[in-house]
Image 1: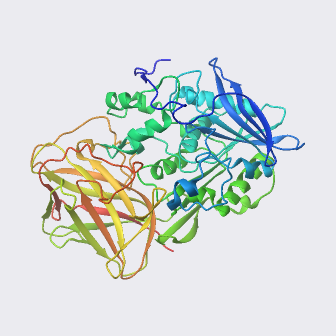
Image 2: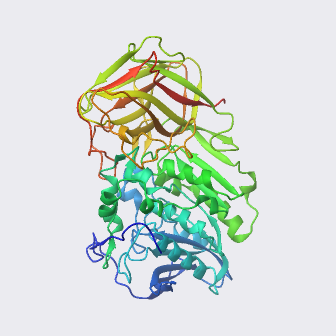
Image 3: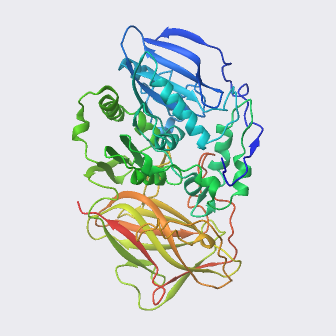
Length: 551
């Protein structure tokens, strides 16, 4: 098949032995009320096998619905998140000792009358082929596993997909291939466009999470896709990166999609974009404001997963019939939110309003300043930034996409990296913290990024409230040249009350300056040189577009 790019492989980045992987050998045992079969071979159309672990209820249960978890992290490797990440919010007792990283718990689901399959991505761990990630071949192998699971004597012919992050991101591509025995997908925080959501944020290279995750995915005794080389060789959104994006319009299987406001830079954008593109007439969206692992495993969420899968895989009547099409959290602060229902995403009746930046006063207002002014800051200084405040005088629910329109220039160099945050301040002036990534509680309302040379928009995908970059070229500036940019601020849902302040921050560096672990996103490959200037008012009326939703 003509791909338009060269396949790149490299030596594995981790060995299975170094990672303590269990050597491949078939074993069968009965434990915790389950028949457990380790290292079952499943054939693929390519001539190599997929390796799976299979869990079924002990005793005669008849034909079983099947849940599949497809993972690069090791089907053999339990991950007690309450111990590994104590700040994740996952509680002791929510996961059994058989639960692998970000996957459904076999003990819970087999007790409910399901078969559970955990499968190693082809080419990972002790492998029979090379590894590739979100590739067409990987999706075809995933398809072959679903069809195998749907045609076994112990199967009722209905297969569902479950899991978090990679275990969800992979669902988009295989669902678009329409395996006949795929009956339902539960995408739980899964990005959908690796380049635009992970590799480059607003055109700025991500320098921490993306390089690190190659290593986590790259445990193998065979060669693996050389994502580092491909990232260097494919700086634009081209055929290589498009090959990792699903045809969402081809997905018509029932879908329960769960996103969060708290995973900016990883899953928030992609989960919502995937949902928007689905063709399925039976689809539900849930957007929460908590920590992603805790929200997946907490008992109320497990009950909703069961209602979804029991309906589509078992044919049972559940409270699914009462679910609204969209269910989302409007956050007050970390751990406190109002749950509201909607019929669409973005939420119906959203009113987009402009708040204009005033460089003279540092304020945000409903009217553009008549006179032009500017704000200047050092983009290489961690403390250097431009700050604009909007005092809230009435209840204000902001739910959805925000856009920042700026006129900017740099005194030196030929480009700018802009990092944007929206924050909520309490009446006492203190910052209100929100859940962020999987473990933090001091996050902002929302984040955005923009490399100014990548400011060209995709005219087909962009809307008045959501600019989408084409990422197909660089348009450099001259020192002092003023450029107009539209910055996508990732979706959020937050309530402001009278006395609160909506704060907009623009910097040349990552917003957070306190230590973060390796898994946190960074953008340290900067193009910034010289002072940044934000121009406001007059004929350069910079503004932030906010999504107001009535209660």
